[in-house]
Length: 400
Image 1 (cartoon, rainbow, N blue to C red):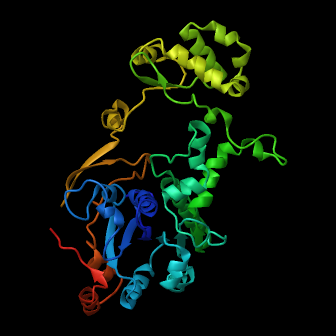
Image 2 (cartoon, helix red, strand yellow):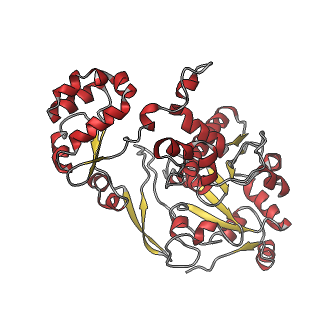
Image 3 (spheres, one colour):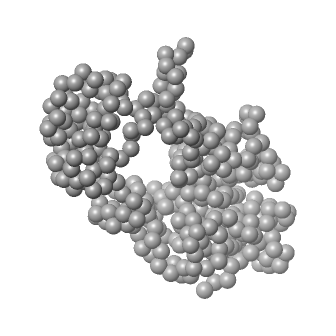
């Protein structure tokens, strides 16, 4: 079995990271994912290092295990072809604003007309039911609007974006579990449905899981913001020769940390006597911890805490991850040969299934690599496909 989603067919009309990464997660789990692209292709095909045009790093890392079908949806023949393709799909996923899908006559009702049991998932900036519903959005704008960027202002004195597309990827994970829940519901009832996964609402939910804090109560008992996370001192600690991550969070952790560091006085200090006290005095807690850790090298501390339950870790750079001994032991990094791009390195699937493991079965496709194949599967005849190629309503890449 290819994976737990073997036999599920997903039509992916998305680009950049949010939609492609969500679809890739499901593709890794065995789904047959057909990526619909305009003739110019996903914009990420041009971003990052590359060996060949249209096959850049950011595209390759988010589009494995897929087939590519090019359709110029401004042409009626391409729209008709898409409707033929979606007739037997399980999921239709797009990341266009709803107004765009209505313009192309590809909203939920249009797709439901040809496939009543379809799971139709739209993921975009803001819910179509609110006043921001027509606004466009990208990761940075959602980090800003969701309050995430201002978290850094509370700590560093100015708003900053996280140096990762956290809004795209968090929303992508929400897309995946929402689609899987809808598929489970359809399995039990036979009924499909429309799903909306807006980035703004997803990220506000994500941020406020811990930062709602005193605003949990009405009237509020305190302002929003988890105090421990707002401390300027919450960062990897300096050692004699580098950095280390140590979090003696629970009461048993704190006691062990202090005992191994030879600081019984910190155990007896009223400011640090229990978890609630340490959080209430979080700046002092972090400062005292930092003073202790500055007295030895990183390796000395790793050795001291090796047999303890105190959370302690090295501080890896991105480059360090490629030689991390744990990742090496679990075969996290996968090397495989792409027919046109040569040897590629990809992160493996992070979850392990005992009976239906995820896998890399298909290389990231060239633009339109499977167009003719997919159109034939949808029942289009040879003459219709030929006409579409001639009119550039579709495109078939050259094979190696």
